[in-house]
Length: 116
Image (cartoon, rainbow, N blue to C red; front, side):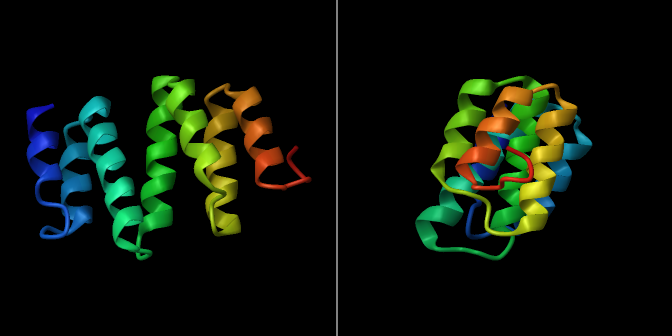
């Protein structure tokens, strides 16, 4: 987790894709989740839109793989994903992870009637 904490200090200075690749190569989910949480928060606080949808989608995937329904629900309730591709990706991840209730809740919150 120490590497992820140090990478959080580089937000705004180092390209997020570099860090994401480093953490994904390590195949350790908790540090990747930690960094993505910080990155999504940083993007939101600084009005950064480039890559924000992809970062949120990756964080949803991490939460789903960890079966972290509490944080998943919190993230999905913040606001709906801006693009239909991101929405479909998030729904697919939730369903593949067996989180059917979370998928249905998100579909309803996103007003996606084809899924909910």
